[in-house]
Length: 159
Image 1 (cartoon, rainbow, N blue to C red):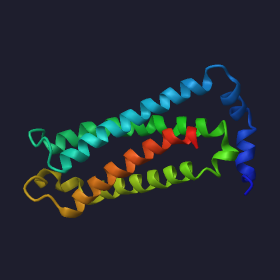
Image 2 (cartoon, rainbow, N blue to C red; image 1 turned 90 degrees about the vertical axis):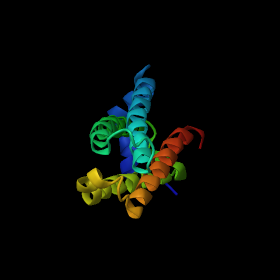
Image 3 (cartoon, helix red, strand yellow; image 1 turned 180 degrees about the vertical axis):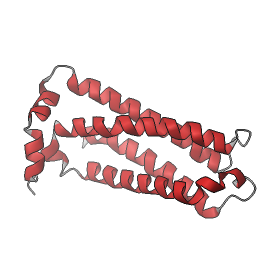
């Protein structure tokens, strides 16, 4: 199957050429992407584990507020750097099942995070007294989706 024309156009754009050709562009953007991944997944995992009942001595509402800010910062770094990395090899990447699976998992994880906020944000203060099963299932889904998406991101280079 041939790559879509839009992906070929992106790859052959000035930005795609710069990402492939500038001496330090790709490595620097890749390191920034890893920084974003760390800032997203680290705090998200801590929050998800807290939602599952670990480290109850940390107040959930306050922990959620702090950890969510770091995760959002990580996502804000991940998205543009991911786009930049994609431009370097857009044609073949649109055909890469590892990338496509990663993007699907990111979509699931983001939808899960938004749904969690909409459903449970106002109920976090009572979470430890009556932890909802569905909310805990969302925390488990979050852990799995983000960890697998991060691992698949690293796997793209080898696929």
